[in-house]
Length: 261
Image 1 (cartoon, rainbow, N blue to C red):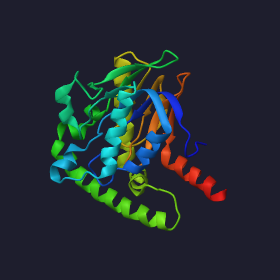
Image 2 (cartoon, rainbow, N blue to C red):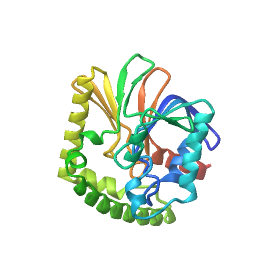
Image 3 (cartoon, rainbow, N blue to C red):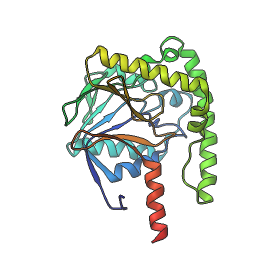
């Protein structure tokens, strides 16, 4: 259990789908994560900034600026920081191969773990048929999703006042919906097929806000989740082992220990 002043070091960390610039972004939770973790390599696996939402209206509180500053500070302190743009921050795809503030922009990349296994790191929107072939429908879905996240924010404000931990209404509804479950399955299959095509051991992606590590017929499918619903990150330990950290659960456990002390 990490105490308030403890810092855990990892070989690599993957973060995606932060959606800075939206009211659904759990920036304070992410800042707590960044306070308690360090790594040699940091991958930002797409949808870090939500350009879709910012085009509709500016929203950028201090906590969102603090997240950017924390990430840039890691690069200044010697960590390798790579950003792989997603569909919500696709404007960065015009700058593939360039570096800004120590952050290198890549279309995708191969990560070699400490145990020698190789993983394709990619946001994953390229394998979402709605985003790729019916972008107008993706924008409509984004508007509905934003409303759901607004409800989620109100619900969790009430839960905090009552002493309950963070809980995602949007994630619960998504995982209970048959069509969403089918979409996730198709997405996972498409990404693992791409990993096989590239002859790597697995794929690390984001995009669908559903954190998971699963072997799919010999190819490891890994999704690092998001910071609007699940508040999850993927980490690599010094021996190459991959683990999903569910930070909301970690924060809740830490608070429970403090309350019991």
